[in-house]
Amino acid sequence: MNVALDARQLACERDDRWLFESLDLHVGDGDILRIEGANGSGKTTLLKMLTAQLSPQAGTLTWHGRPLARARDAFFRALLYIGHAPGVAAALTAEENLSWSAAMAGIKASPAEIERSLAAVGLAGFENLPAQQLSAGQQRRIALARLELMKRPLWILDEPFTAIDRDGVAWLERRIATHCEEGGAVILTTHHTFQANDRVTSVVLGVAD
Amino acid sequence: MPRSTTGMKFTDEERSLAPVAGTTIGLSAVWRAQVKRELALARRRGGDLLNPLLFLALVVVLFPLGISPQPDLLAEIAPGLLWVAALLAMLLSLDALFRTDFADGSLEQLLLSPQPLPLLCLAKVFVHWLLTGMPLALCAPLMGVLLSLPGTGYLTLAASLALGTASLSLIGAIGAALTVGLPRGGVLLSLLVLPLYIPVLIFGAGAVQAAIQGGGTAPALALLGALLALAVAAAPFAIAGALRISVNG
Image 1: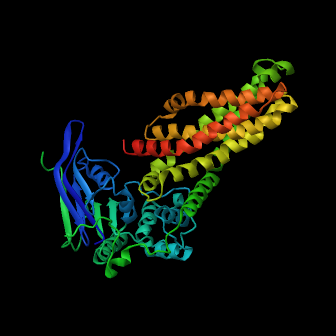
Image 2 (image 1 turned 90 degrees about the vertical axis):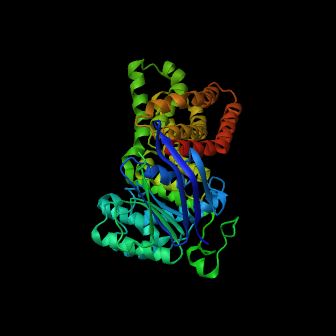
């Protein structure tokens, strides 16, 4: 069992308004959980709770049966998170960005491995250009190269399909599917519809009002 | 479903997703990676590095014009003036410490890393001091010449600034971490941090004053060292806590 993230009766209030209430979630091996909802319905807030950055106003979150806040260390070792802002420093090259990301994850990454993961996201030949000279989509791809570089069972991705072209979208969909076949799990917020969505569970936020 | 309490047990077929022992790195490698990144970022920004030095030089050039070019008077106020100018130069450079990292999402990555956050914060502050406080300490004696600072004060000036600016970087980083999420945090940062800067200023300027008047500089320098030791021990944890609060505020 790689992934066992459970949420019970999760709730979030903002400005005297419940963004979501009594939300139950289970994410285990092979699951794809897609969080949907209109703008401002609390998708990113939910992701922040699921990544232990915000504590929920009500309800409990557990990782392998332990409260998430206390299992932080083990949880962060299993987590690969790509947020709304992808965490790519504009002044650094793709290669520098990735080698820093790997070090922060505690993984040793050789230049050859970094080159290979950049090639996988279609950035071969762009390794030594500062990220600010690349397009928005290419900068997103630098962040997505982390999916290739680091082996982490749980991926949490905030709008991963933003600014990615059609080939990139197809690649990412395939990559998410293979990750789940290998026993990983993915939680993502997106408006994108999956081609093969038999394993995708959807949660829709903000329909109660 | 059997409850696993560790969350770290894997069967053979699932092992592919777990980091293999031997491919993980130690804390010293994490420290090196963070320092290397900060140095690379600073190199690319280039011009920003000169701003604190330029500020110090401007203050030192303008003061004699505004007050009086009399060497006696200037020598009298030189220790305090150089220290205040260096302190303000440090303060001005602090606002940018976490700002770009916050905007591009790197800070979020840092917070979600399994590495100890205080260590990563300390690495960031170390590079800030190396590229701001250290150059100020090295250039201040040169500025002292312009203010006709007596020759006996130069070494103490550099030493007190080297020790003191390290404390200023560490203390200031707490304020920078607390205000990183605010759109115009600069003013608030100054208000938060200035009261904590005062002891460093008093002992720093005091050490130089003592050196000029022929007194012992050891007590003041020792106190600066003690302040630095306290800051190194406590500030990284405060910075880490402050970052967690302001990134998710």
